[in-house]
Amino acid sequence: MGVEGQRNETVVRMAAAGGDRQRRCLYEVLDVERNATPDEIKQAFRKAALKWHPDKNADRLDEATEVFKEITNAHSILSDPNERAWYDSHREQILRGGDGTGEAGEGGEGVDLYEYFSSSCYSGYGDDEGGFYAVYRSVFEKIEELEKEDIGSDEYEAPPLFGDSTTPWTSGPGRFYTYYDGFSTRRAFAWCDMYNPNEAPNRQVKRAIEKENLKERNKGKRFFNEKVRRLAAWIKKRDPRQLAFMRQQEEEKSKKEEDKRLREIQHRQMREEAMKAEEDKEIEVDENMDDMYLEMELMQQLKGKKGKKKLQQLLAAKREQGASDQEHGEEEDVEEEEEDDDEEAAA
Image (cartoon, rainbow, N blue to C red):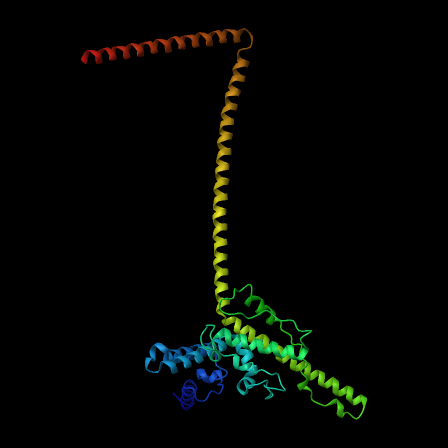
């Protein structure tokens, strides 16, 4: 490990032990350069995770747990192209804290959102104080409190609530994230003014000052809106309730696809059975048609003197066939009677 890597590990130890809680660059956490490739980030994460995994550090479990959490957070952000791009463009503000001007408290935005772009700001996914739900619920309650103070309670409309671990997705968190995905502040952002219009020497200068101040206010609003939306998206990605809802959606989708497949099989079998029944019916009709054609042909043959003679021959043959069948039947009856007599005699 180089000098830089040793320094980073020392800072990690201090942070994990509750000493220096300064924000650390995510690239420093993984000990990679800021232009590191995705593969280099992945390899650095695996190396650090292997070293700091709590299962491998029973003798310093608390420290390893905190460091592993920090490593995992750094990897989750830097391995996502969108989150990494946003982090890179706001890195200085995030490390410095505040709104980028050093005015995180009164007189500025009133809330420092950058510190919440890290899993180190909460402990576990419970509803207890310091847990995921309590921490982020309080953050957005603070945002809305500031909105309400600035615009007045008469015009204020409360947004959907963040809820807790038991809040159903569709009745709470789903609507919450939809709202903050398109969040737009209604605060004045007067602290962004560059000049004091009351100090203008004339009306023309005053209008110019007001125009310039309006640009700065709108710039501040856009910047704040982006942070709030990004934070909501960052939280949503890690919200266990969304993950559970997505699993439920996937299960329902799979069930619907399976039901559809079974219905298609059933319909196919019904069609095949119907087609077979239709084919059997056609065969029966064909056989009946054949008999009808034979009868019609026979009727044609029996017309005229020759037909009468042929009819007599057919009748004579039928009578002979009937007499032969009768005689054969009588012989079978006699044989059966003889067999019965033999059985009685034997008995």
